[in-house]
Length: 133
Length: 402
Image 1: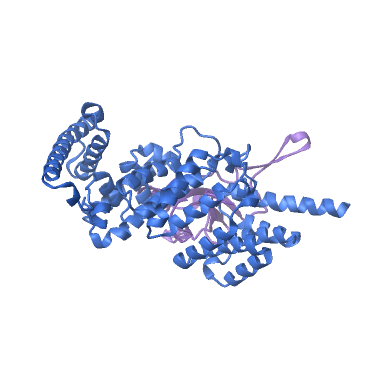
Image 2: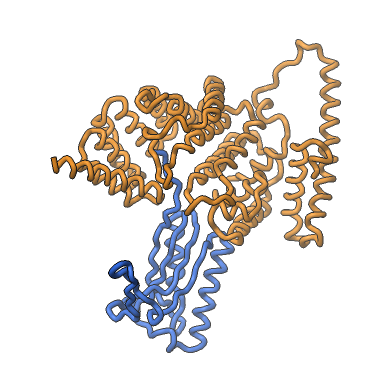
């Protein structure tokens, strides 16, 4: 089964400053951790894809207006304390394994090397074969 | 290439597989040779000559024995000898690739690569994962075989039943995976169901007297026969009852029916034969109304006793409804209600929805269809269930308008 893991950057649930204020060592440790996660997922035959996303400053919300014309709202989104920072799609044997991977990603180090404990949403991808009906 | 040179495809295939296996054993330790293709051909060529010589020697011995023995003394071999007597590398390779020490995902990948002869890219594409990920699954499987010290030979007699069951299970998993939808028509994508049938056919040819393998092949053919009618023009699922039966593959049905008819009286009768027999009853019914439900119900009862599977019990409950009416079916589902293995399972909701619809209880049917749609992990199935709910809701509002 495939699962999508959505990494939320939450200012509400966790007390840590934006990454731009970390020390170079802390940033390096964080990047190295993510690199290890991806290498490990590939080595375990579970990696499907994953990307990081641009911050809320670059994000746009689009709705269709009159006659399908795009109506664009620019970020940042002051009303939300959480935003999507990146995602993975993994292909693993059990839902428990997907949860285990998510929990590991959540331990990514932040300031002082402490785990960020970011919330990771785990969504099954609709990829199962249908049963006979 | 070897097959052309020697005019014997099966032996050539074996030789190539042995060469690949030798490569898998040697290359990681000794390094990949400068010309891997040439290396493989040479190793396979040498192995081919050995195999041809051994085959000629065996034939000579048999001819010699046959000439010495009068016809009436040619006794039938013992049952087990008949099943496993001939050493065949394809079979040994299948046993190794489907070894229970491997995870199902690894066993599937290795079987398709080493026995099915698909490229890593083809397998990766079929499973919609990157090639590097699939390559890793295959190499992990090979490493596992090496580190566990699993020998390249037939399993011990005591293990053969279980090991063969593991092989059948892996082939069945490949078959079901073939029904996973992709985003759109994709000509490059290998059809895993077809591949599974091909591999099971090979296994059946090796073990023609193994009735469960025959049953598995029959089940696959009888299921695959319906695939042209299973989806509509926009990729939507069509239920068995509503399929256009003229679009079923008649030759696949005939072959499947013949196989299961041959296997059943020869026993031992296992779950694949029973499922094949059920599929045969569906496939042979001229219309949904003429389906022999009493017979299907009886088969599900046998299957449930054998497997103890809650999903089988659920299918039995639906068959009960088809024979004794929806209330009897709903009562049977209610009895399963406490099985923790079925808790929150979308199939329970889908079965209930179906039976409420049969009973004319639209409101409950709509609620159950929606609950099932929210819980399935299959996109076509979700759309189907949502559509059933929508149809009933539409019928309800139009009848209210009257």
